[in-house]
Amino acid sequence: MKKFLIFFVCLGFYSMGQEANAQISQGNHSVGLEFEWSDRSVDLPDQENQQNDFFSLTPSYSYFIKDRLSIIGGGSYYKRRNKRFNQNPNSSGWERKEWDVFVGLRKHIEIRPKLFMIGIYGLRYSYTDYFIESVIANEEWLYSSQQKLNQLALFGNLGLAYFPSEKFSFELIFIESQFFKFNNKSTVSAHNINNYEDKGWVFEVDGFLDQPSLAVRYYF
Image 1 (tube, rainbow, N blue to C red):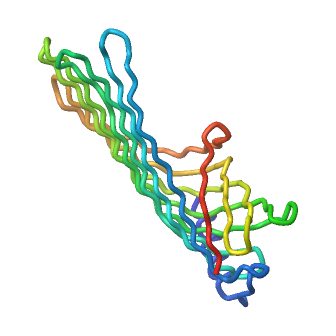
Image 2: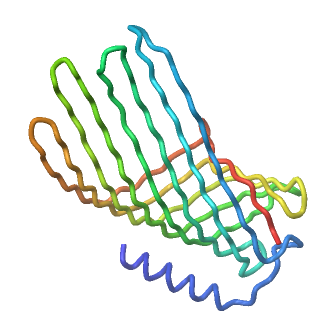
């Protein structure tokens, strides 16, 4: 893993030293924004109700070091909550918050005029706070669990960019892969309080065709 990191850092310094050329006629710079939001309430049997809301925001900036190749950096905030309620005081639910920062290289490959394949690879650090709680009032029982997860990853994304005009593009990311190191610290509270720690390495490949990541980008 250390060899990969050293290679990536060296490649980044080398790329920043190259002469900057405009990406066709769009410009040397671009800014992008990805935004997702949903709020649902579902009535379940036995007079039970489930609420589920989701919010995600990802701004980014890129600078073209040569034609169709740019350095990109940014961050993201992600939050999802799920709660279930009965008419009695019983309830259960969970909440997940995640913060990311990333830097990498971004490549455009023309498929046809106005349509490009885009590939991104780089380094990403993420911090996740995941909380679960369940209350059974009749039995005076409370269960809660909190996980705090740190990850450092090499990642790669694949998607499409469509230019309806020269300065704007709409983008869809549908495949993401990552190789990351994680450190997960958990606290579980029921009758007693227990602490756990989990460390390791993971490789993942995810497809987002069922829920793709959409964004808009401006070039200048």
